[in-house]
Every structure is written in structure tokens, then in C-alpha cells.
Image (cartoon, rainbow, N blue to C red; front, side):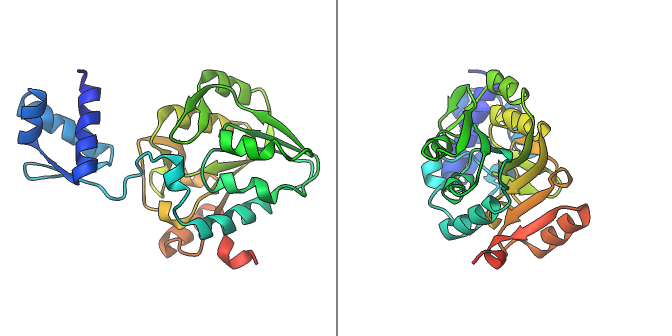
Length: 258
């Protein structure tokens, strides 16, 4: 077992139990206490645990990977209004990218009246919905399936994306922290998201307020590098003000959409 695999198993235990002890891991993995403490220190540095005497506790603000069907049930009402507000930013004749994510997955229903749209997406669920809208010129990113997000990832997809220029990117969010920026648990997802950011004239982050103050392993974009944030009015006041000072246009969907 590699050290990375051991840390994954340690993290799985802490996620399931909320805590983990050095002595338990020493016995389970047949390694020294020094090795386990090093593992826990690395996990704390990544933000997923807090070290405590004799072990570590789960960081409840860390954005762990969850299956799409589970995330889809969370904050459904807020996500609907955010998806509508985001779709209202799409103009006729534009070329846009729709990232994966449950909120962005609600946008296609609000794009049916748009004219001469070019849409690229790496999300299979979103592509399926868009396929029935005949007025949309649909492009699907190729690659390997990431089942947790029902999205396609990989170098082929990154190269495909970099062959085009887009007016707008609608970027999904797993974690949004003012210092860390927009993050995701998966490195391959982060890589393809960074490619999307590089080829879009405007980066629009789309998220409900539950994602603020959370961070994950892999950075996609610094907070001050996004152009627009579409969220709900439960965004923390300090975060809202800080983003406005950075020059980010913040749209509160539940206050602007009827």
C-alpha cells in the first residue's frame, strides 16, 4: 500500500466516524506512530481534518466529493432560482460553456427560448437535456467519465476546449473560500475547469450559499479572478462585501428573479 492509499483510507475512516486515533491507525496499517502523525499533519494541511491530542477530527467545512444524485437533493429551491438567474445572463448568439454541477444542470430548461446559441459542456446530464433543444448547437467534451459528477475529464477534453473561444463560462462550485478561491476534490476536474476559464471572456461562478467557507484539495480559480457570482441572499455578509471590493459582480438570485 502506498502512502497516498493509506491516507485515503485514513480519511475514509475519519469521514465515517468523525474522528480517528493514531494508535488505531498504527495497528491497522502496521506502520509507526511517526508515520501516522505525518499522514494526519498532511491531511490537516490540506484542510480536511483538525489535529487533536492523539489523533484528528473531521473538518466539517471541507468540501468532500459526493455523488451527483445526493447533491441534487440539497437546497433545491435556491438552486432553481440561481439557475434561472444564471440563464438570464445568456444572450442570443453567444457561445457558452456549461460546467458540471447540480445547479448548472438546472439551466437547460431556461435556455429553450434563446436563439443561435453554441453550448459546450462536459456534463452528461446537461448534454442530454440540451440535446432536445434544436436551436442550440451542442458540443460535448470528450474524455473519461467521472461518475461522482457525471462529467467527462482528461487531456483530450482539455485540448478540445482550448481549440475554441467562448463568451461565457458558467462554473460550478464545490467549495468557495475567499483565501483559497474556488476548489474541487478532484484534480482532473480542476484541470478541465482551468482550461474552461482560460478560453472564456467572462467567468461566472454559480453556487448556492452552502458552499461558502468550504475548501477542497484542488484550486480552480482565485476569488478575484471571477467576473460574476450568482448565488442566494444567504451568502455571508463579509464574503459579499469582500467580493464587491475585489470587483466581482454579485447577483443574489432570490432577490432578482420572480
